[in-house]
Length: 164
Image 1 (cartoon, rainbow, N blue to C red):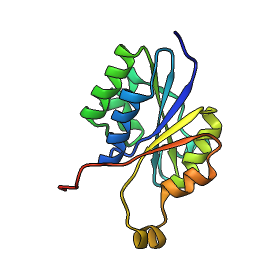
Image 2 (cartoon, helix red, strand yellow):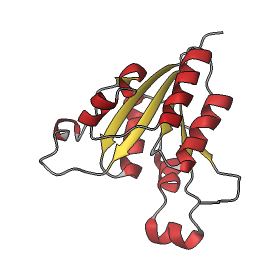
Image 3 (cartoon, helix red, strand yellow):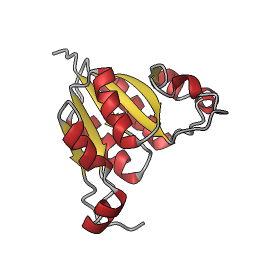
């Protein structure tokens, strides 16, 4: 059975976002889905070559290009071998189209913006596991996104005790 769902994953290459990626591949994605990898970079100064995409985000980047270190260097981004392996697995085994989109700015606002821009049916995020006081002082991206996103949001927690 083929699907045309648009599933997003907020990916910052942290342990929590990698756990969320694995969860999405194992539990959510199905044949025919489009899987959007959404990565937010801090705002850049006017000297950045990515200033062109500061308001709209980068063009959609297919998985084949997302794998290319030299190409991703143009976006001032380093990818991760474990992440690329999981995305390759999803693409091959689940027949999922994987594309990436980069945004520059505040993660909370840009993730919500991406949900609308990409017309996502669902968004998956990892959790950093901040305590209550840290959430109040630092703000929680996941709290903001679950409150303001225009689609269902799944937060995947790390259930294993932290050894890092």
